Image (cartoon, rainbow, N blue to C red; front, side, top):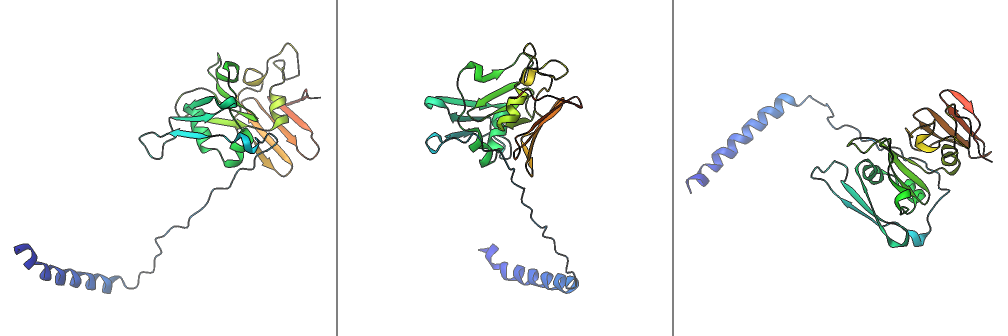
Length: 222
């Protein structure tokens, strides 16, 4: 009860202080609110779009930090088999655009469609593309490759100099190495950069250009 008796005096004192501050700062018109910005949406190839009957079901397992990437993402793959992505692959799928997820489709099952290479590269194949990372260490960036011809050129067996060779290596083990970007689009040209080169496709003409260590080499595509 004693505490309540003092409240009117406190309110009067508080109003007096506010009046004094308002009088001293009345000429300050500074706008403290910063303008908001929205990220640009990535344009992705949708040459391998899953049908409406093959919609991927996604379940995420959150970490304790709200802004952190999920520890795991569980998807429904072919024949309703569950596929769980972890580490960089889970982080990438979680942050992928709707267009990227649609182009990827359902994850493929089986040991040859996912796992860790001898080099440490981790990957998960999908109906319409692949998510791949240099290794499974936390914070390692992963990338999505969905463009059909770019992916085919990357998966073409090549000699160390990048020229197509039936005795060469392909994919991340080949001379191009691991992707260092998603598919990017500028006009009619789509491109993916790799550790040791890049592959571009002109979607208007169908022409594919492969560059390995700064040298243009045949695409190897028919």
